[in-house]
Amino acid sequence: MPITQTRGVRNNNPGNIDYNQSNQWQGQIKPDPAIERRFARFDTPENGIRALGKLLLTYQRKHGLKTVKAIISRWAPSVENDTAAYVRAVEALTGTRPGADVDLSQLKIMAGFVKAIIHHENAGYAYPDAVLAEGVRRVLA
Image (cartoon, rainbow, N blue to C red; front, side, top):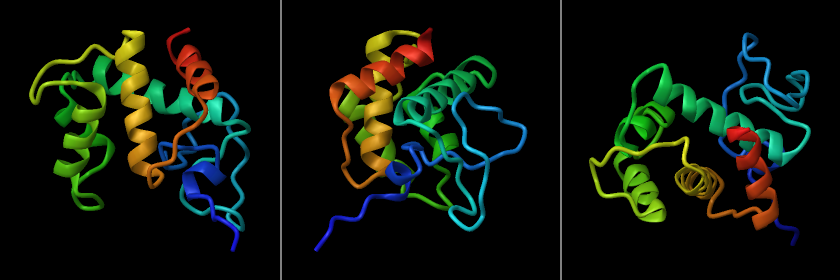
């Protein structure tokens, strides 16, 4: 029996970012409701990871969200997710103390956050280290 890919992996959108016409993400593919009605699609996983990270940076820089709980509560609202469990998982995977401020402009913090979100959004999926590293490099470039 073939293993089915998660939607996020299939769409090269491992953060499951909603499609929004006003977002002109690098590498975003023109929407096609026959393939995907809700979420953005990207040409490569690296560009999907880039969009995920850029959105996280916007949460921090524009909206002033400084803790894992604040960021994940916006990323994955409790109407659709077990946000508390999501926060605990990201804190655990990034080694962040509950309630501590995080600086997403630091490579190690951004990489941990992205990896944790991908893991949570895609049923434990992990990209090869080189793909993750290149995606995060594009975020912080």
